[in-house]
Image 1: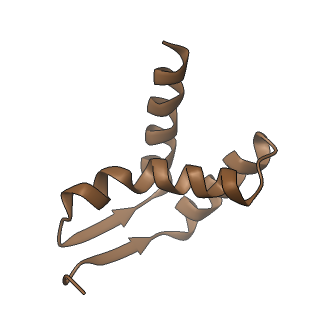
Image 2: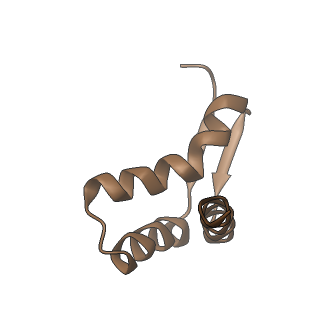
Image 3: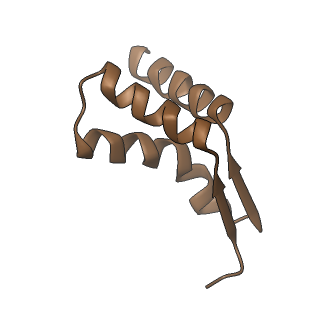
Length: 69
């Protein structure tokens, strides 16, 4: 559509699913995790987005830190 390439590595998908399972979240919770990881990319619209497990873990740690504050 806008010439943007999105690549989500298998390890990133695994990290998102593991997080959802750890907190006993269902589909809506998994969707929330995906949104948390992808929100920044959705607004910046770079030409290529590559999501890896380290990105998932960093974004979720950042999100947890904001909830604790």
